[in-house]
Length: 174
Length: 399
Image (cartoon, rainbow over all chains, first blue to last red; front, side, top):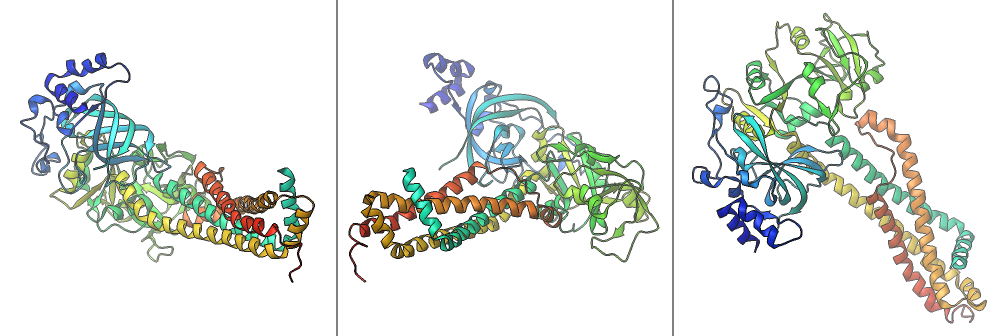
C-alpha cells in the first residue's frame, strides 16, 4: 500500500502526495523513501547513486582553485516539509555527554566515511534528533522517520541540502 | 503483615553476628557494582565531552584513533608535522569557516604545551558545546604569554605573572630546557573536566621562536569548522587523498565512537565481574538463612504453638531475605558514596575522571531493585523448607 503511494508520488509529484491525506484522515502519511528519491526526476539519468569520482580538485592540488566537482547535485524540492521514513547509515557528528548522538549525517552506504568517495550532497541527509539516540554501532543501519526540510546552502558542492528532524529512530532489520 | 516484619527484625537481631556479616557481604558487593557503574558512566561522560563542535581533525597520516588521542586527549605522539602550506590551503578554502592549529611536542613539568592561536579560545568546545572561559587574567596576546589549564595552575600553584620555562619533549623531567626564553603566565582557564585542564597554552609564534624559527613552518594537527556541514564528507575525502602531503582527516564523533567501542569491552567485562560478585553475596545470604533454619527449629515450633499459621512462617522467611538484601543495598549505597566522596580528588588528579556525586540514576535504581527482587526470589527456597518442616518439626523430639 505504502509502496503504491510512493510510486504514485514519484510519478505525479506533490499533488498525489497530498491526496492520501484527504482520503485518509488521521496522522499524516509517512513517505517511505529510497535514496534515488532524493534526486529530482529530471536529474536521475545524469547522476548515478554510485560513488563519485576522485576529489583531488576540491582542494585544488593540481593548480589554483578548483573546478567544481559534480557542481550540481540538485535536490528534490517535492520532499520539502514531508513526513518521511528513510533507511541509512549514521555518521555521528556530535556526541552528547551521555553518549547519545543528536546530530548526524544519514548516508546510503557505509564507508561513506573512508573507503570510497563520499556521496554527493543530495545523497546526504543532515539529521538532528532533539532527544538524541543511543547509537549501538556505526556499522548498523537505521530507519529514520521525521520531517524533511530543504536548506539553502552555498558551498562549492551545491546550493541546497536536505535536513531532517527525526521523530523516530529504529534499527533497520533485513 | 507488620507483625511478621517485626518478628523477622527481632529474629534477625537475635542472630546479629551472622546477620551483620551477611549484610556486610551484600553491602560490599553492592557497593562494588554501584561503584563500577558510577565510574563507567563518569568515564564515558568525560570521554565524550572532551571535544565538541569541531567538524574535522587533521594531522599527518597515521591512524584515526592515534590522531584523536594525541590531538584531543594529549596521549601518545604524532608521527610527523603538517606543513604550513597545506594548513594554509585548507584554512583558506571557501567551505571552511575556521581552523584551530595545534602544535605539540614541548612540555612544562610534565604538562603538555600546546601552541595555537586565538581560534582555539574562540572555537574549541567541550561538553556538549561549552566554550572555554577565562577564570583569571586573559587569553594570550604576546609571544611569550602563557595561559594555563585549571589543573596545571592548581597543581603547580601558579598564578598570573609567574615566570615559567618550557622544556623540550613531553616527560616530567627534561634536560633540554628552553630557558633562554622565559614565559609569563597571563591567564588561567576555567575548569572543564577535560584534558584542556592539563594543558599549557602558548602562541604558535612562541613555538616557532622556541625552535629558532622566524615563523611557523609546520603544525602538529589542526581542527576544522566547516561553513556548511554538507561539504564535510567531501572535505574529509579530499584531505585523505591529498596528493601533496600524506594527511589524515577524521570526524571526531566517528572516532570517539570507535574509541569508546574499544574501551567498552573492558568496561563490560568489569560490569560482569561486579554482577557476579553481587550474585556471590546473595548466595552467601541464602546459605546463611538455610543453615540457620536448623538452629531455629525451636523458634519456628514456638511460633507455631502460639498460633502462627504455616503461611506466617513462609512470609517470615521471605521477609528476612528481603530485609537483609534491602539493608545490604542501602549500606552498599552509603559505602559507595562515602568512598567516592573520599576518592574524588584523587580520581580527578590521577586519572582525569571527574565523578559527579549526583543521585542514583534510573538504571541504577532498576539494578538495585533487581538485587532486592533476586534476594526475595532466593528467600523462597528457605521459606519453602521452613514451611514444610514447620508442620510437624520441632515439637516432636528427634535428637
